[in-house]
Length: 448
Image 1 (cartoon, rainbow, N blue to C red):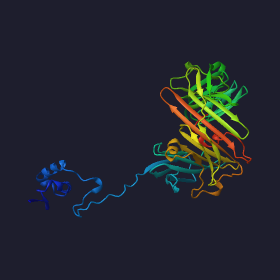
Image 2: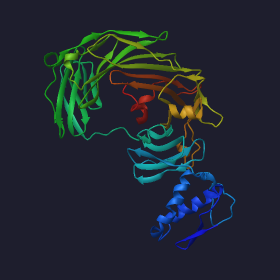
Image 3: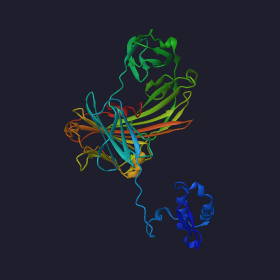
Image 4: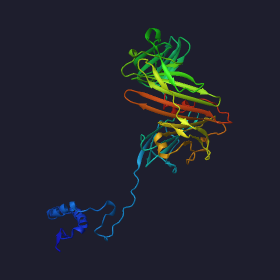
């Protein structure tokens, strides 16, 4: 057997083909050894032969400096994915956990920005203060969801004021704020950010849009007379399917324009009154929500079906009934929870509880998290380290609300369905009301 000496390395070139893989490994290492470029030609033939020779598997790599016995690679480390956590003001506490594992503090990057590194389904807990008391938000997601958790601790505060009067009873909208009156010749005042705004005013039968209104400081506008300045509204027929017995039906129309994110232009009985298509711009969007509500003295059920409409055309709507076997109460852990037997396809489920002392806790869960966990319940967990006693609910007097949302949007259609059941806990003195608008997180899920 003849051996070749290459750059101080000895390598047998007359080797049975069955032992070629080990020499191939050595040849590959030699290719990158220091000073080996000048010896490249002598062993190119060897590397060419290695192409046809069987190669070593990744998990049984041989080491030419050790014994011939292969070694097995250990388990690969889990890859961690960063989750951005953003709040609008500095929170008291930001924690996270993966699955049902232990709670850990999120890394603080800035006063209102945190980060959590996760490898799978996770929950983020943010605690902050509202004007009426402590507010805890739990958000459960997976890596298939947007890698961002936004937890709102306050409602928006707008620095400027725009004011004026309106001849007819009705509504005036500016940005996300609106004012309304049932009496004529009334005065309105709305907060605003600096910039361009579309002011939208509606009476029982007319609509007025003042576009590109410049707001650089507090501003007073001339009187609004919709009969003289606006366009007439027309009836929009609605066909409703799947109403509950005893439900009260109504309509809510919301107009979005380039400089107005949402403006209520109709709220009342069906059929709704909407503007004709000619009154709207090419970038305007008009949504009609058919709303139903029913109360039996202890529970309040609200359902909404929102659809994009055009030219006040007839709108068919099926009210959503997504959950079966819903039960709400206090679980074995002493925390408020909701459970169900079946749930139709959805985007978000949330459970909110609110006591008479101003403490509120809300848990928002994505559809992918429920699918990954196989869970049929939501728990308002308060077992996180650092969770103060003052942040717990007073279970002697509290209300709870179970909320389900689904959305679907294409280039030509839009839908948004809600189911919201609020109930006072049995045997307590809690008030019965629709709780959704009491917290910033839920109020930002929808404008209904």
